[in-house]
Image (tube, rainbow, N blue to C red; front, side, top):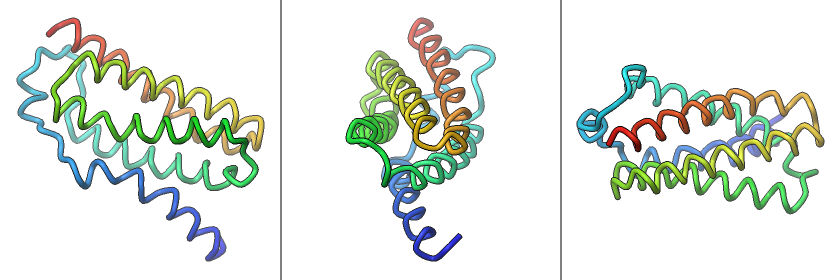
Length: 148
């Protein structure tokens, strides 16, 4: 990877870690909730998101310059929704708002996948784990919402 490309990669990567750095999850709250038996341990979320952020940034930095304004709008929606989850879930402790937020992240990630596939198909593959993760997150969040 050329130095200039690496710089752009970092520009797209670093912001994804912002909410995790500024706002720590209250895992005592997580464990106080009624959780489905299959609910992952917090460490799974930590490592899962780290991997996904690297994949997202890698894909986006390769298609961003050629992307449409709609792509950029959905990227911003996806980014801010993704960042807001920790605030909605652990800060405000609003399960419904957290559920809606996860749904927005899933829908916007699906749009980003489709648009990335149109721009450069090989970079769209990096969104597949993100969409699967978001689908599981939606099912988990729906389960937590119903159970509480």
